[in-house]
Length: 182
Image (tube, rainbow, N blue to C red; front, side, top):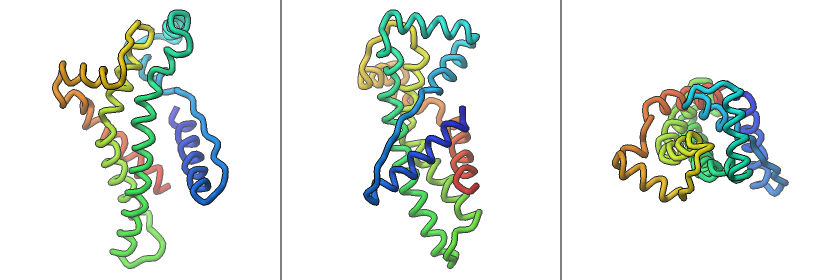
């Protein structure tokens, strides 16, 4: 799941850079994380998961699978924008600080870890909503993003929007550092 996601991520980043320079941008993605989250949350077999998807499609159509796209986009688009902006600025600052023209492995690793950490914390509330919506797949739950966030805050206070803070940080910071430095 991580390999196709990384390929898509870098392809989109390269294409977005090309757009900003006046070229064409094609982009699309597959919600593989939806399958991953649903299986982990309920420890389902592929056969059971298939039944959940069939039921969701039968009851709500393709819209049932799209319900997580809003929070996913609200997590991933700002994450990427912040990540790349902070990464490029951090890398430039570190190069200037260490008086080098080409960034070293340590510079790209550090800039990647710091930018990934910052972006993951800021976008965590959308990750929480996305995960909760994925877990609810197959259930007839129809709430807007704002209603979902209000429900989380009512049940767990504002800290509920930051559930999983440390695991996300432990996952994202090294992943961003390794990805960008290699």
